[in-house]
Amino acid sequence: MKAEKNPSEETEDQIAMYEDCFTEHTLEDIRYFFGKDKLTFVAGRCSNHAMRALDDLDSHEIEFSYKELEKYWSPYARNLVSGSEKTGVTSFRNKLYKGKIDGKFPVTVFISRLYKGDSENDTNSFTALYWYDKNKN
Image (cartoon, rainbow, N blue to C red; front, side, top):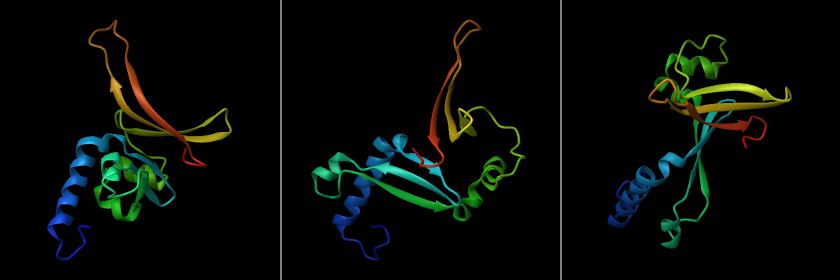
């Protein structure tokens, strides 16, 4: 919609509605996975938009090649995607880990949040996402 040279007022209203919906309601729920040469984001569609017949109630994928994203990456991300053994020291949070379940099934784990207790006796915990590398589920 943004690529339209002279967008109508209706188109500009739709763009504003989508931007508001994504930034205020769905941005936190966007899923993603790392492929061989691209990063894929999977975003849900808003039921409000579907009710207005602006789009289907489903999800859609947005893909970026690693080449496109290269200039935005930290040294850690650059080394991770290139397969380098040298990833450098980073925090536990916002980090990908690769491994196998039962020594057979390759998985990727993303640690998204770390919760630290206020005192020594409090329990620390974290939130993580994982997916099977073969089918991205």
